[in-house]
Image (cartoon, rainbow over all chains, first blue to last red; front, side):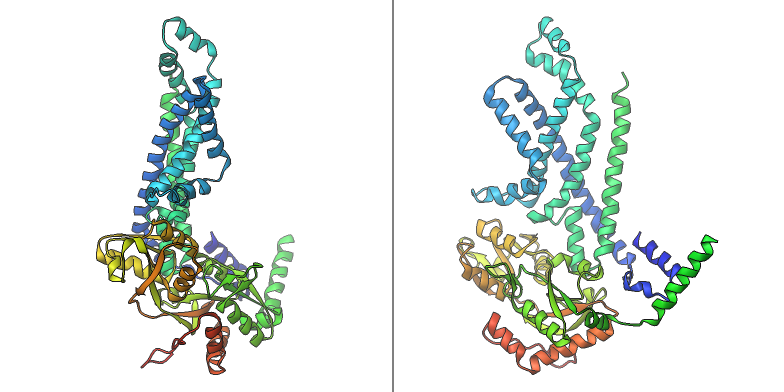
Amino acid sequence: MAARITRAAFLLFPKGRITQMFDYTFQWKQALNRLPQMLDGAMVTMEIAILSMGLGILLAILLTVMRLSGSRPLMAFATTWVEIARNTPALFQIYMAHFGVASFGIHFSPFVSLLIGITFNNAGYLTENFRGALKAIPDTQGRAGRSLGLTQLQAFRHIIMPQMLRISFLPMTNQMVWAILMTSLGVTVGMNSDLYGVTQDLNALTFRTFELFALAGVIFYLITKAITFGGRLIAARLFRY
Amino acid sequence: MKKMTLIAALLGMTSIAGTAQADKLDDIISSGTLRCAVVLDFPPMGMRDESNVPIGFDVDYCNDLAAALGVEAEIVETPFPERIPALMSGRVDVGVASTSDTLERAKTVGFSVPYFAFEMAVTANNATGISSYEGMKGFTVGAVAGTYEAIALEAQVKEWGEGEFRPYQTQADVFLALSQGQLDATVSTSTVAQANVQSGNFGDISVVGFAPFDTDYVALFAKRDEYGFLNYLDLFVNQQVRTGRYDELYEKWVGGEVPQLMVPNVYR
């Protein structure tokens, strides 16, 4: 984009005084040479996002069950989790998973800290997604299940949950995109193998800040686009009754 | 018709702009302000005093440079990784930010002659029993992302083939991680190491030796093609040493034997 601006500026102002603003020469080759390293980083980013999403969904189902359980302590636990996850910065949650717990003598590697931080965040948001989905399912269905002799848990597992997951599927892809983007916060806890960490390392080495981060931006964009597109494809199958 | 007016206007603009050939040095002098990128998380080169005012060697150096140019100094706080964006986006005129003058970086920015030289020290958490640079082999070590010592240490860990390297975003995070036992040891400039160990904020850690890296010469940096300004910076660094101001600032902020800024047997 900026390269195009420079070119356009050059056409408009051939004398080149505009260079005062755009006097940076882009060296894309220097960044592209590092592409293999960045793609390795992208794999780590995907790995964290997928793991955090899988764990996040399981935890969110658990939290949803807790919320429906009617037990006060369980409901309070689930609500506290959701409140903290949704109302504090993801950066704070990841930082706490590293430096916070370390003050109690628990040491997680940067990878694990980042995974815990993002999973915590995912679980909180997904629980809210599930709550929205539950509202779309008539109460009568659960009651019908109960009247047929299912226990409350059985009714949830066989009747409510499949519909809940289906309804909240597209919001889940949103959260997945968010998880990918949140991996970039890993640098605050010493991560240097994910896409953003690799990019930052390369930047320190070469000072080719604009090229490298632009390239990282493009890779992030492509990954998230692929996820949204893949999500739609899967949804098209899931929603076919 | 509208198109013609636009073209005429553009032509007019280029011809006006074309006559002014002021370079960066002229721009600074006529603007009356010198904006320096300084890292304020890097004692004793750049930090803040109790009333949050920037102080340190680099801050004084920027003030001296501004005084020599006859302009006001403006300290722009710039974390290590943001030095280049700050320069390229025109937020600062010059970096007085303890920046190592590597050849790789010189492909992007222009460096003055060295204005300071660091030695690298190993600081270890006492619980680990690390007592030397070699002793770090196999341990988890870290440094501030984007610094000379981080690049060198990461390469060393790769060469050792065991242990782990972790870059943190700030010097404060590195020492926090060290005091918590998340890191077993770190390599930092000896000035930073001494300042942090003596602060007593980070518990049971101590400086256990020097790291055998090449002397870390740091230079002022500006845009690569601003020869007039870079030339001025070179002479300024030279004058700081010649007039004894460099020794004075070193004594004020660091103390001890003043490092040589000249590499023996070669020019520049």
